[in-house]
Length: 281
Image (cartoon, rainbow, N blue to C red):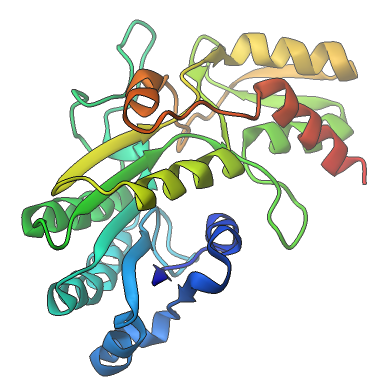
């Protein structure tokens, strides 16, 4: 059986398609406007992975009202197609930005985390998630995957994705820009580990619905991370930079291990090494 991927991005989606191999059916954005074509593409599929992290139009800022409208209207054809199909496992892959921004002393992101979108695009993400969960049934279960700080190099090559890669590039000019005062904590996960979670969710759908946060379960403060970069490269550190759009906080990794037997295989040290190797090419 096939697995469809919709709202494909240039970073995560190619890794998912590579994992699926010949089973992958990549749904182009234009097919969402033609229900007949969309139904034909989904007909042989057992699952649909919808990437729901930002508007398909990358020129739209996350804070623009158009972001909400674009994400809402872009998700309607998917929700309706799943209803018409009647037997699809819908997997919605988004970000932790539907939760309130983490502050030092807060608990882990997990099953009990409050929902409070922190920007307009996150409102659009949550609109689809909530509508999908309301429609979930045994024949068409829904899985929500919300992920933190995904790092790695796109399959089509550099530049790398994520703060670790951004800092590795900034080191080349002599300093790194650190969001906030350095006390905030990030939980990094490599794109290949995220794909392992997606694969596990595909292999073991929930009875009807579930939501999981994805991360390593380990955090590092921006100050401590900056110290590693400074030690490795001699770069200067510029604190107090804008933290708009940054995702701080730690995921409750116990849920992932208990539910799927998942533990990250790629460490923070390996992710940093990849970032430095990528800019050195």
